[in-house]
Image (cartoon, rainbow, N blue to C red; front, top):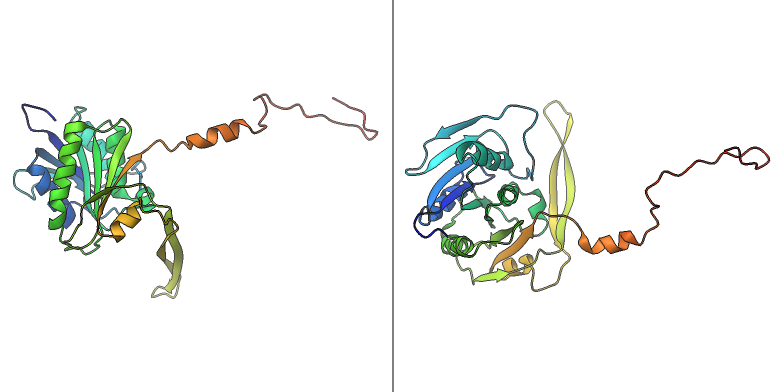
Length: 275
């Protein structure tokens, strides 16, 4: 953390600039540093690491909360981070990027689909220490007050000690005001068992609504799913290098040729090699 000046903090989310969660997050960050908010102008949940390339991006300053520089963006959460770095901070990176607080968990496989976490990933790609925060409550009026002291504690530690390059933190809070503490975890092996509910529109044309149940295949007591189910906040270190390094030696044992194209051999009716 800088010794003689307040840290600069970028706040983003995927639920939109008017969401209750982002208000709670920026309130905590105001206790720590100078806050700038860049967030989508509407909900962008489940957008993952999508960026806008086929249509113009709209980006404008808004005045929602006193003492906070705020911008709304027509694009995705990742667009928000890119615009913040390039247009607001003009290439001078903030000291911290925090995303959330998301309405709903981003534990386990959800990290892949999450706009909240993808915004934090983009911050890490830009070499900004980054954290994504989520709460197990989809209610638009969810109470985030019990998360605040933990958020402040984690953010201060990241500012003071930093994070290894190309990593970030994924922090999830259980619902309710009785959080037992913080557990450092790994991502659980779990996924959504999905189904598509077929329905009819007013013109009797079919459309589909994604549904499903969350299935946990991981019985370990060191996972984010276990921690949340037992009343703890989970902190998972995340990296955006998706290389399966342990598989490289396996692939090196395969017979994949030497990289030169094979010569096609043509044979005559009698088996004679024709070249």
